[in-house]
Image (cartoon, helix red, strand yellow):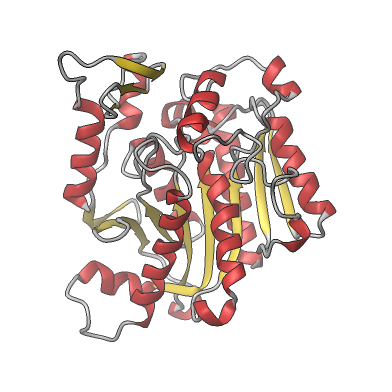
Length: 357
């Protein structure tokens, strides 16, 4: 995926609107839908945000205690392998990352994800497997859920492969390092929705179909759970970042949800009346991170309350003083002491959750 990741990023950054085409829909700064159905994802927002979207190439030589490998396939995977191993050389748990972007933008090779998930892999320690997800509107939901499930099937196939059966050294390294009986799904923003949805899909299949792979837990971070009507936090909280605004929330979901669906759809409102009762949804233990100053804080908390009422095993981490996906802003994490401390708290919470499950 080294080439695939770079090419995808270049296409997103460099694709220009063809001459004579008209913009029929736009998400400010992020994308334009053209009248021929094509999508232009050239970034037109503040230039200072661009560095966070630059792709990080893979590297087989250790850096900061880990190596980074791209595995082309269906779907493409990016793998962070820590040099550390478990007690007595034991295999490591696996954290499968489902990236955010409102189902419409972003790529797991971006610096914003790399700086956090490289650090997380070494801190836990765990093998982190980032999944390249399809993008809407070219591919609407449930394509993203299908890709998450396909990533787990690919991990299971790798775990079951025999020595010498694969010709990619990175796949052998992954197979030898990963304990697929302890897989944790983690998702940023809309990726948090996918944690719930993919875990439910796997749970419905039953453990027998997935053995030896087992989803041991889920970690939705600031999930994109909302309702068709505005929550109080949406109405009263002021957006403080180009990376999450109400315009993005509304338009991305309109482009990503099935045609004709509203935000009350189960993909974005699993605690609503259109969704199956949460009591009936087979979910693993969950750690849900909620940002205090998130535009969608209230519906995040409503989701947590609904999980508790349904008897689910759920822990909640409140990121005090923080806004949506704060931990992905490398520059704020590095330069602002409070943001840096909250990012450390988040990593410590994930580490503790994994160790308990």
